[in-house]
Each structure stands twice: as structure tokens, then as C-alpha cells.
Image (cartoon, rainbow, N blue to C red; front, side, top):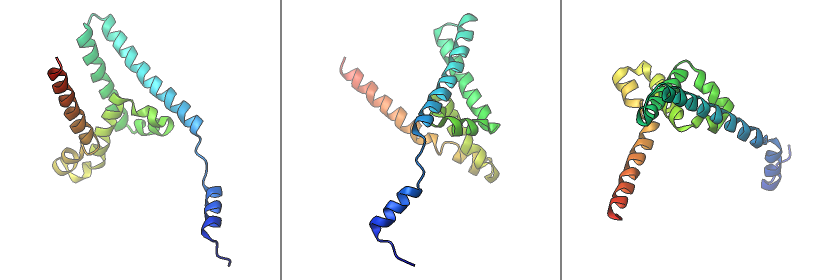
Length: 146
């Protein structure tokens, strides 16, 4: 058996690696993300048309979208949406719910304290820490520049 040198092996390996369908992935992310945002807009319009003020409408929409994201994750549907839509499924509010519910479900067998409670924020924790931290810094800078 002949040995391949590094350059020949690199060329051989590049031929065997499939090219990802970038255009298809972008289109599917756009469609799935757009559909999730459309659902959010429908909920917002329904709440607004039923007499809620702007703050209550925004809060109600966020609550409903988190619930939908958590429910779809619990039913195993959100993972399928993520496989189809890729980054489009990471729409902030439903993606955040998925990021909290998925580890909680995965570590449920380890119990509620050492499993669910301790692992629930394993993915979302850093987002919360840096999100809250950066908002405090921006708020302080804004306060100082007044």
C-alpha cells in the first residue's frame, strides 16, 4: 500500500468532505425564524386587540412565547424545528426557553436538586450573567454621560 504525503492526503480528504448547503440553510433559517416571529406578532396583535396596554401586551407576548418554546421542547418538537431551521430556531425568546428546558430534561434522572435545578441554567447561565452585567455597565455609562 502506497503512503500518501500530506498534500495528497489533504486533497483526498477535501474531495470526501461534503459541501454544506449554505444557501438552503440560510433560506430555512430565514423561514423558521420568520415563522417564530410571526407567531409572536400574532400573539401581540391578539393581546393588543383585547384591550391590553403596551406594557401588558409586551409582557404577555414574552410569557406566551417562552411557554410555547418550553412546551415544544418538552414535547420534543423544538429539536426537530432546530434541525430544519438551524439558527432561525434560535430566535431569542423561544431559543432561550429551549436552552433552559433542554438541560433540565436531560438531567432529570439525576434528581430535582442535583439534576434539574443545578443543570437548568448550564447553557443560559452565561447569557444571563453577561447580559445583566453588560446592561449594568451600559446603564452606568448612560447615567454618567447625562
